Image (cartoon, rainbow, N blue to C red; front, top):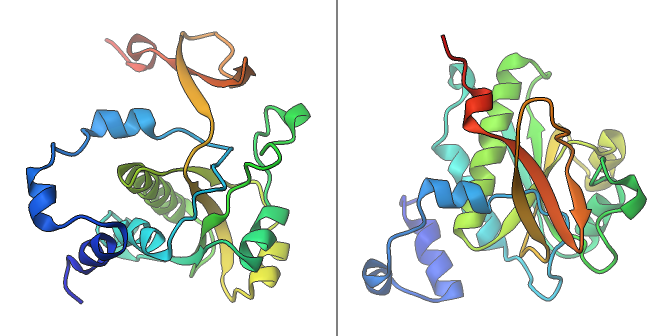
Length: 215
């Protein structure tokens, strides 16, 4: 399969061609992608995520680092339908805001990437998982989407419901965000819990001077 196969198929489905892309403005910088890459818990249900978009997101795993190059992660793509309903029944969001019962009705995600492992969890796998999940989310943002890393889920029920032989280790929700998230400056000793006010989801982030170790 050619390296640019997914790009070509994406263009066929969603429009655009190489000439137009070459003439378009440069892609967003890494800093911009990182800023847009927030933990979205509400999605626009009028937008249907296509399997080709999930293919493009999962494909980043053929390029990212892997501990001892074992490449032990496997990925199940779930789009709108019965399997998405199974996933939604077995995940939980917004642990710090239990009173809101997130996601709000009518904003549930309907596309997912269920990440499984071919081995028992270990420190090397945890590193691989973090690299994989962050890289996939950055690709989602690059495609104009957003997502959420979910580790709070019923593994047994999800594995059985989806008919998986491998054990799920994480779930990535993918969709077009339907909520506003804003970063707020914080310093060492502040409460770092995220919160909502006026319909906006606020996320405190420590300043550079608070995370640097200076000698």
